[in-house]
Length: 143
Length: 117
Image (cartoon, rainbow over all chains, first blue to last red; front, side, top):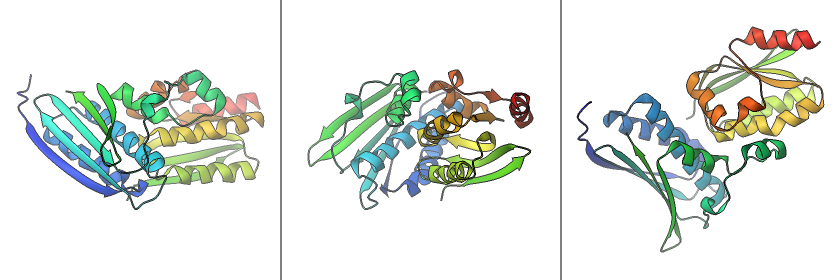
């Protein structure tokens, strides 16, 4: 076992455009590499963050590119924590029941799949509303 | 900038969509355009070749869900080929293998269409 004693924090703030998804993924990939996380686990974290940020662009900011998405990463020991904060409209995908995938395909429903993936890919996913009309999602992956 | 490319080509009566790079919420509209073009041209036998696709998010998977019914109603299908393991794993998590055909090689998918005529 490698000695996992990495400890650092980084932050990225981008405008709420899907155009920025690739730089968000690069940001996460670099930090996961610094933490010496396996490529398989890194892939899962990147996709979960992509899905969370896509939800922010779609649901919190309704595709307006003027909003801000703040992404904070904290690595401590074997715990990789991502906190994503926006100041868009309140939304809490946790209130949406977990999709029955077979029904989804039948009904051609596409929304909700991102949240479903986030929960499958990460160890913890927690949505909260912060003061000053902010939404926050915290995702944790142990590696 | 997201690195993504979509290209459509014909092999006999089958149409191949080649995907390259990263398919996410930003690039998914390019794939929708490709499907719109095929449907407009009444081309319903579709193989999506994932050989050069490195990444897919739910926005990309949603495109297939949005078009498959129309295509099947017209006696066609969307079949998948040449998928990397990391990409397949996402399709698997979202239950696609029960409803779509996956082939190791593009030719296998084309043959399947040819057998059915």
